[in-house]
Length: 443
Image (tube, rainbow, N blue to C red):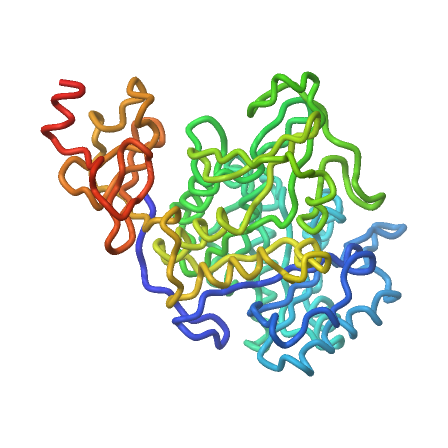
């Protein structure tokens, strides 16, 4: 069960402010994003993270950080702080560009952490992120030693973070958290990309799900393994995942399909940046809202795309706040830049608003709380007219979300009541489901 603890400070961030790191891809940055677009009125990020410095192997099993030809871009990246002095910049090492065997060999060879520190500080970065997604069993202790040494050698001068997997199977098998968690300021959890099947449609980042990996279970698992909630930072993807349907008439979640061709030459198949979503829609395209996962997809003839919208992101940010997690990060900032609409960084704006204490949540993003005991009568899949949303028979201002037979108690905003027929919060209580009405209907 998710725990409720007090949000802690992290490297100068006030306790009332959630962490909001913004990741920028090193390669993608050259193609899509000019940091000059990051103007004064877009200073929503608490950290700007540059992904990733690739670790490479040389002859004779000597290893080197990626050559210095990109140093000019790193310097340009850090020049952002001249306009935004409150912003902290972090250089991330590893990531998908570094093969796991190379990372493992680095750790086995007794890596000199001072080289990482020298490299990052010489270019003006305020911190170091280590992105290692698939440590082997033999890497667990070495990875912990490396992070502990990195913290010790930095002598408090640098932010130290880790970007880690969101796959529960990988989390359980590849990370031994307790030995190193005190050495990092926070962890960036890749809580997206859950559906990786090439030949069936699927949801990119469902909030809840009884049938697949999901955001809630991922963050809950990291907390259960010993990571303080205030150090857990939820990942939000600023790209969609696209498929071409085998049969346009069969367009539900799980329909036979194959990954769409890259929308840009430098992107992998299926990936559609949010800034390009409009290119695969038309005036007849409609969004389909999946209640169980609190996510969206749309169908445009043969094109099927799962993606985040500002509405789904606000809901996730409330989940972050209610469980006292440290915050959320966006991957990647350059995918969110919306120059064609006139509203820049719409997803980032939704994250900032959702994390802000004073923000007035819309009625479709209700307060989330866990229930102490499950109600097996209310969470009844045999009652599809209500399932997976179920009324609270004792309080018309509250209701449940059912993950299987496991309920999560929710509350409508002030002055609203749960409408059991329309399954949403309304301004009147004509359709409030009480014990008496339940017994009449189902008794």
